[in-house]
Length: 402
Ligand SMILES: Cc1cc2nc3c(=O)[nH]c(=O)nc-3n(C[C@H](O)[C@H](O)[C@H](O)COP(=O)(O)OP(=O)(O)OC[C@H]3O[C@@H](n4cnc5c(N)ncnc54)[C@H](O)[C@@H]3O)c2cc1C
Image 1 (cartoon, rainbow, N blue to C red):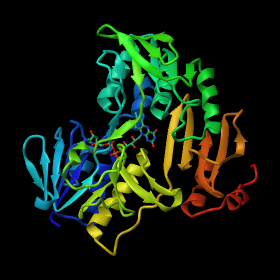
Image 2: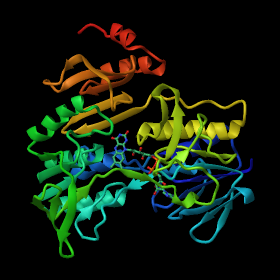
Image 3: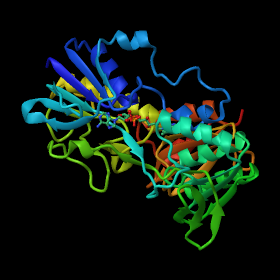
Image 4: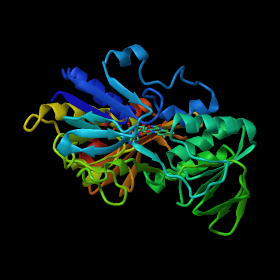
């Protein structure tokens, strides 16, 4: 294998490049990214970057010298438009082609955009999006955030910190429903309300109204909210369209790239990692796809090493999923998978104190550990999720209160 191409220069793409070099790959390594900037970190975009408080000195994931040391053929501002495995070629949007004996697909996901052409309606996925939202914070006194998933909830919290009046609209009965069981999600309902967010739960958005600019958000119950600034946090869609015709199998319903337990796709020599990879995890009863920062790095490392290792020497990817979120100065952490859970038990602290660790169980097994403002305790239980642990065995491990 002399030429490897990584498509997508985000967290997964960067880690794939580093893992390939660390594993001794000294051939031509091309990293293609359609954004103009070097690999950067998205999590601060909805947090410190928006508020300007505690901001990281830079969003860059690596210094220039560190990136240069990887000796990459770096193609930034260039999109991969087609993969032709038969000809060992990956085509770019400038009409050129790159030879590809091996490929890592790491093109991530993009924000789902509401179907409106109105100015003032934003999404938040890229550094460019975040710069536009931050500028809008300075020009507006009110904001409507649509969707109380993690990005929406963080934007609402950041907007409050920046002094804006915030209405947060969510179709589900509690915030964060995609990743957190509603019984725990209620804590976050109160958190928003205590921070003076006008939280509208259980009601969807029917449409956005205005002239050329948004003026109001119409809700499914017929009510309307005046708004000249909207951020839509409606989830993300995997960037897989460019793989059409490549033979790389995709999961139905925009479910990402189908991989096996080694992160290999249906095409030999082509691996995938990060937000778009859909793979079987033995602990979670089937296939999963994670939009988690830590996962993107870990999975890219395994995918890259497996690409070099070939049959027989590959390592299955069975991580303990990890996700965090920062809202109103509080850190939420989730290990494993949380929604839906059959059993939720607070094992340290209490929801009322907004400081707790909860175990989440399904089918008699521990499947997740969720914490609010409890970092060391949450991390202590990580080992219980690295191996199958019954619910009873997990509870027996709970350390007595300090
Ligand atoms: C605002 C925000 C806040 C977040 N906060 C957290 C958090 O607190 N905790 C957490 O765990 N996770 C968080 N995440 C999720 C985390 O950032 C993602 O899981 C991570 O970025 C995934 O990395 P990736 O490399 O798979 O994909 P991406 O980061 O999406 O990178 C893929 C790159 O490929 C590019 N690309 C797409 N198509 C092509 C193409 N055809 N050719 C070339 N390049 C292409 C994309 O433009 C992008 O630059 C957050 C995400 C966002 C958007």
